[in-house]
Structure formats: structure tokens, C-alpha cells
Amino acid sequence: MQSTRNKLIDYLHAHADDFISGQKLADELGVSRNAIWKHIKELEKDGYVIEAQPRKGYQIQQLPDKMSENTLKWGLDTEWLGKTIIHKPSTPSTQNIAHELAREGAPHGTIVIADRQTGGKGRMNRSFHSDSDEGIWMSLLIRPQILPYLAPQLTLLTATVLAEAIDTMFHIEAQIKWPNDVLIDEKKAAGILTEMHAEQDQIQYVVIGIGINVYQEQSDFHDDIQDKATSIGMHTNQTIDKQTLIQEILKTFECQYEAFLKSGFPEVKEKWEKYGFKIGEMISIKTMQKTWNATFLGISEDGALLTQVPGKEPERIYSAEIEWFT
Image (cartoon, rainbow, N blue to C red):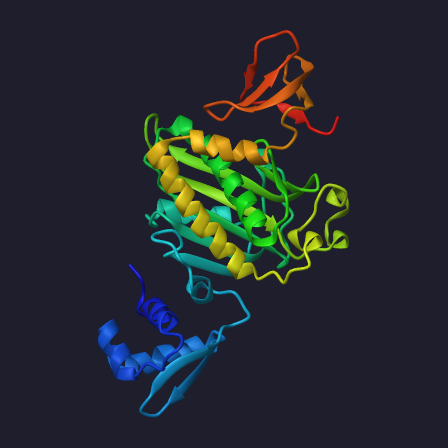
């Protein structure tokens, strides 16, 4: 359920061209005029510039230039995703907070976002460099009504959402490196970490961690990833507003997630292969038993890596070390 302050933000946003009287706001929100005045003062502390005129009421003149729960909700066009937002200026990991909230019963669609992370992590417990306010670091808590074995498909879905948002907003050609990296010019611009808590036949919750490099310059990256990482800002002359990008990602995710629940994986597969990195090219695959080269064909109906050794039948790869830059 939305708080009174969030309802106030939504109402002022819907009537941004008009002054709204304190009494009208009080009636709409079911609180006193004094309560409205107190909420307005709190919004001003958050960085909103709100003009108040006698006999006319209130009108927002300027939005804050800092990120907060309130500013992220301003103009967020979703039905359920992001109705609960937890924002932290700094935290070790948004994933950890999202897991804690999930265990405490936080609702489906809760978002945890931080200006910076001091202990960000990626797949296989690798560190993820996110101790900077130059990027987007957030975790989505969802409670999908799907079988646990389908959960990895949510990583692939999320990758298509990020690639599509970057493409749509900045006209940058993004590519997806299976299973969880989004590349620009063959360098990593975003990563995804999907973690699940489930019983044998039922998912309790899924936390999808998203990290996106937005404003960084090459020199901002740690020495160990300088030749492997990039940012959106390095590939566009456009002004980038992180909050607008976050809202676009959340709106796109909600839409594609609902389509996935309704229609299954085929549409995700089609979109993923539109952005798939190195499809039709040779890659090197390494498992505990052997190493071999094969042509990358795309992804299978269940999301596995689909490869083919010349003269043999296509093979699905579910877990392996892939050398993409042979």
C-alpha cells in the first residue's frame, strides 16, 4: 500500500500544470490540511521545489537532483514494480538487503537501490566493482508463480530488458553475453545476478541484482577491468538521467515479465537472440572434463547455450566456462 507521501507525489505529478489547494489534497488523500502542509515541508527537505500561493495551493516547480525513494517514484509508470522502494546512499550489497526484506515478507516488486555498494558481488562470488555513484546498483525482489527450474530464464529476460532500454533510450547497440552480461563495443556495461530461495516445487522469492555502468570514464575503472569494462556515457553524447533510465528499466521489466508469465519463454528467446553476442561465431567451451570449440547457435527453448561442433548434432550447454574472445 502506498504511503500518504507517495500518494501526494503521484497526485501532484498528475496535476503538474495546476495549483492544487491544500483542502483538495486533504480530501483526495483523506488527511487534514495540516498533514498536507507537513508532507510538503518534508518533500522540500528532500529537494523538491514547491510553490505555495494563498487561495491557489501547491505546485511542484522543480524536482530534486538527488536520488531518493520519492524521486524514483515520481513519474514511475508501473502497476506493481517499484511501489515499495528502499534507497540507500551506501550499502555493502543491495542483494543482501533484498534477501533480508524477502524473509521478512516484503511484497512482490520491492526494489532496493543504492548510490554505491562497498561489497558488490557477481556470479560465482566474484567481486563486482560498484563503490561509485557513477552507476546504477539495484535489486528487484519478485515472487514468481513458476517452477524453480525456470528461474534461470529470468536472468535472460532481465538481460533483454537492459539491452532494450539502452537501445531505446540512447540508440546504442548493446549485446548480451550469455548468460548475464550486457556489452557495448564488446566491453561489459552491465551485469545481472539472479538468486533464488525455493522449495522443491515452489519458489519463495527471487532477487535479481542489476549493475549498470552509467557515467564512468575509462580511468574510473579498477586496473583489473579497465580493458574489459565500459559505460553508457562513454558511447553517447546525450545527457543521461539515471532516474529516467531506472524508470525505463522497471517499466520494461514489468511488461516483459508479465508477458513471460502469460506466454512463456519463446518471446524472451527471440528478443535475446536479437542482442546475442557472437551468435553464428566460434567460441571455446571448457568443462571439468574437456575443452573444445563450437559454433554458437543461440539459446535453446529452455535458455541453455546452444552450440554445434561441425558434423555433429547441436548441443545444449547449461554450465561451462566460455572463452568468447578467441
